[in-house]
Length: 182
Length: 172
Image (cartoon, each protein chain N blue to C red):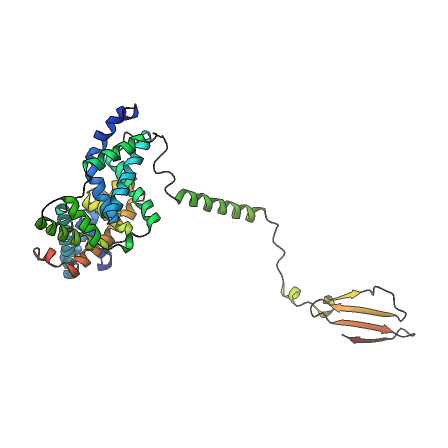
């Protein structure tokens, strides 16, 4: 990071490369659209470089990156205000093509993504953010609160609601996912 | 612990997001309540299933060309010391506006004139004579008269006097 701050631009790529896929993955799950996800993640990387000097070295870099990403996604959502109306068919196709695997693999990938998206669809934007950070990205409550710029209590409240809704959706529409444990 | 409280905590207990004390309280409730125990088990299974789906989901990636272009675009930007999150939230602006409104309201309450003396029942219903204000005519008439107007009802009474100064009034 010091090299970047001292003007070595080539050092930026190795600094952020580990977050290339996690950032894009989180952006996709928040926006639920492949193209929007790329735009949001790209904006987050641009901001990360632009404001790198403001990063507090005592803090976690990944949390900082995610924080920028979540803010970029919110901004993008406000600008576009179309995320709620998106169907999953388009993104599923885009993502399947992007993986570049065979038809069988695409079919399985589509099925998994479709189910996951269906589960996430039941959540409000805030619940989705909290759920993705805590349960999918495995950030702890405090980190999630810092990323979302809210209190730990707020994270717990939304997390509790998100898990309740998730359970209802899975039991209602995808019971086969939980049948093994019965 | 009752079921209502347990239902709030069960989803958090499923992800080990409760303090030890609260988790123990939930556990104790689950031992005694079949409905909540069933719900807790379902939430745990649903959470495991969602995590498994996310783990099996192939995350999209940029092509190498896209990634190179992104890095080039990013590093072409001017480095700034400003916080990247500044200006993204309306909260500080709203909080400032709310503080200003409160300050203005407080100043008004402190600096405003003292309230008028409380209105008594007598003041609300004063004797009829107190509401009547004598009005002198603009031009002095040849015939001696006195005009009085009620503030409350607008009733105008003109009182004429004869030579012997005996009154003879009528109202308008």
